[in-house]
Amino acid sequence: MFFLGIETSCDETAAAVFTDEPRVLANVIASQTELHAPFGGVVPEVAARAHLQKLLPVIDEALRRADVTLQQIGAIAVHHTPGLVGALLVGVTAAKMLSLALEVPLIGVNHVHAHVYACRLAANRDIFPCIGLVVSGGHTSLFDCRSALDTKLLGATLDDAAGEAFDKVASILGLGFPGGPAVEREAATGNPEAFAFPRSFLHDDRLDFSFSGLKTAVLYATFGQGKVDGPLPEGPRRADLAASFQRAVVDVLVEKARQALRRTGLPRIAVGGGVAANRTLRSALERMVEEEHAELFVPPIPLCTDNAAMAALAVEKWRAGEFAPADLDAVPAFAG
Ligand code: KG4
Ligand code: ZN
Image (cartoon, rainbow, N blue to C red):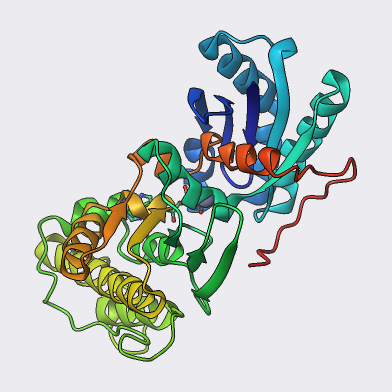
């Protein structure tokens, strides 16, 4: 049984072909980074128009790489929530049309839950029940995942997502877009203890996050208290700001993940989303799970950032008979 997966929720146009094992046969991603870079962030309409241009060629390429014809596809999976509505609509519309034309089931997949499922794909074995930690440009959420389809939200960010904070701090420090990898590179030579940045809710008995105060603290440390711009920092000072910021984000993510493991008694944690590509976060999580006698799953980088292979969560839905209606909608907000 072959599935075609489609992802257009933000700024990657992606298609994947996978089997019901699930095994990924092709995972094609067309990035729009260069299109958005001049604007310093993702421009929703630019993203939607680029999806419109790229989606069919990307699907063709995925089928070619998988050596599977469209007629062999037995179900269409699409990330239909959450994301930028115009961007999601392109993928959802294409998926509906393909499902109708091929007379195969349509399966709607939650993009955030799919980020956790990327760990299941990479591990190639069952990882549930586990804690799911999704750290991306749009989300910072902790889940109690009893199974791939039975997930309960334990906590989430009250303001900025972790990736969003990386992107905004990159912009403050003049490091460009996308911010995460740029801040990580800059931080490599900096002192993570040079600045004492805030760590919201660190020891509170709640599993929520807040990164907007941290972002403001970096802004004021860069330009002076109450100032929102000025000469860009350079050299070791810029590296220290990046490293101290990164350490603050990592400390909070790791501590909340630890609290989630302890609170639920679950022995495993699966981490997904673009920020999971961060090496400092990965090594801090490795140390934490060792202390907690738990097991850590983090996918390789191409499965951390947005992709359509993680839509293989649809295989679980297919087994459970959870198909989407023909009027499946694109839902921008995350509903838990
Ligand atoms: O999961 P993703 O590709 O897209 C969303 O669903 O949002 O995540 C993108 C986010 C961006 O904010 C990007 O700056 C961040 O992930 N990111 C990183 C790194 N690579 C990507 N953040 C920190 N360190 C990285 N190496
Ligand atoms: Zn994502």
